[in-house]
Figure: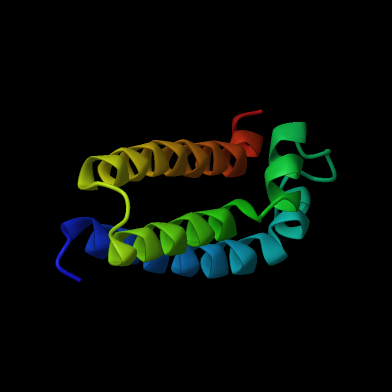
Length: 109
């Protein structure tokens, strides 16, 4: 484990596991609580969609594990792994931002 990208992928994999567990607990009763707060109004479609599809942090875990394995095997060059890491981070940040917007969107009606 001499490569720095191995540690980055391990860190991101761990954070994705924590985020996936946290997201499942948060969304367990989110729809019920928010509908009570909105007095029976329907949730926005964007919020419904993100409450239904909570698989994307697990995709991040799989990509992180693949990155760790590729980094340990050492077959691709370090530049390829850094590019994969940057693309992974950009996609991860976009999905996290979209999730936060989806959960706060009902409050701005």
